[in-house]
Length: 233
Image 1: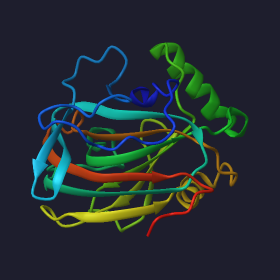
Image 2: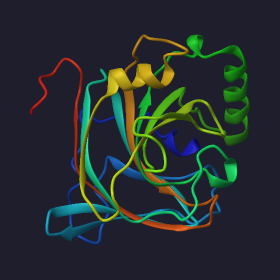
Image 3: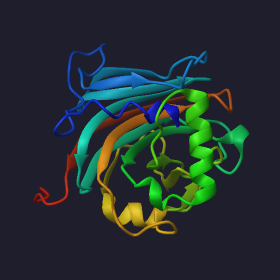
């Protein structure tokens, strides 16, 4: 969860995943990990393929996110294409030792702390005292995990402040994804509030620190249309 904390510096919209092959996307995209992380960091690098410039996301018993901060914008539509060429061998989002994802796209919401359940607020404060960082109150992560029925909501086993929505596709096959962020927020956090907060950040990631495995995936054509704007079909 700490990897999603750098959400204070802001940009107006989500910058494209573009740049020179072999490099990271330019700022405001930044690589982030756990506080005082000693694990290897998930590798992010731009790569040219026949479909154009894509983001290569590769794990090896590693953890990390590529984060794009926002100024707090209304939830709208988020779309992207992704592909996993090497899936993790034994992920299981129900168990701490299996809590890894070969590819994920996460949205950090500015949910008021006042609506976070009391026990959850105390756990959040405890985690913040240990990390020294202010942590997000609500994060929805779209997880590439075809072992679950499409659209299953799975609370993170380490913190209920993160909820997965599982998606999947065939290995080595591009899939286009388009999500209504407001609807998905209510689907994931509707047990706590049905008022949809603004978006603070978009984060792309993959992790294999619990399973100690390896994965390889790609993300392309990421686009965010904030609420109140016309979505381009």
